Structures are given as C-alpha cells and as structure tokens.
Length: 114
Length: 113
Image (tube, rainbow over all chains, first blue to last red):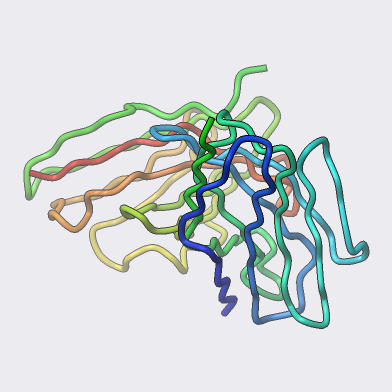
C-alpha cells in the first residue's frame, strides 16, 4: 500500500515570499503525482500535477519538483499571496494497478500574511 | 460545463438513522470515486464505481456502508445505522477514464448527533 508523508503540517509565509511543501512516498510503481488545493468548506481542486518522466513542472507561480531517487516531490509557490491561504494536499496512486486510488498526505495549512 | 455536484451539502442525522449522499459526476465522466475526510486528516479512498458496477470497494467499511452508481441518476453512498464516528466530510470525485484527473465535488458534511 502507498504511504504519503507530507510536511510541514502548517506554514506561515509573508506576502511575496516562497512557500515550500514537501511530500515523500514509498512505492515507486506509479506515474502521477497531483497537488490539490482546498479552501475551507470546499472540495479539493486540482492545482498542478507531474508525471515522473520530468523533474519539474511549472504553471504560473506554482512549481512541482520531483526527485525520483529520493522518492520525494515538492510544491513551490512563488510570490505567495493572501489568496493562496488554503490547505494543500499531495497525493499519489495507491500502487500498481490502482492508479485511480489516490493516497493523500495529511495536508499543509498555508497562511500567507499580507 | 457544470462540475461535480453533491447533495446535500450538510446532513444531520441521529445515531441509528440512515444517511444518503448523492453525487452527480461531471458531464461525460463515467468513473466515480468516494472519499472520506476526517477533521485535520487527508482524504481516504472508499470506493470506485463505474456505471452499474463497483470496481473497487477496498476502502469502504464492511458493514453499514454501501455505494451504487445506477445506469440513470446520481451515485449514492448509503450509510445505515449511523454512529458518531461516521461524522466527516464525504467527497465525490469523477473522471473521464480510470487514469485521468479526478475532479472533486464540494462535499457533504455529515454530522451524527
């Protein structure tokens, strides 16, 4: 079974700063790592995702970095804004043949101060 | 293009009652997934369904919980004889294929008194 460990549990950043959230996984036989953003009272929304054939993917202010040898992937939010304040979840498929079954980290509560 | 819809958004039940949660997938999506989120926890996979079929229910408790996705109408997650420990947010997601991105609904927050 897949295990995903996410850190930190909470993060406070000043406006304009860089927010970094890390995830570590155990099993390697899968091909999709999404990050979800969740605002209070809402469902998770896909933010950005990466496949392990690339080491980095950037979309606007959001970048995923992937380190296959270390079994880690991270989310970087550049020029963080108060509107980015939310809970962020990393996820990975549960294992071989179970790409549809996402295992989520416990989440990181990001607060961006104005 | 409407997203994943769930209703009700909030549901209050007393212990021993039944809870029915409904999910309408995005247009064109035939794959539905149910997840449960406990306070300050990540989402936990419960069940994966396609039209009229349960594909994987490995995350669903063996008793009191059931799910269906009929040929017509929404997917239903049913919890019989609810207990306080069932209080959680239940999210439904849908995708176009089993390996495509899953899009989540707004969730149903179940409170058991």
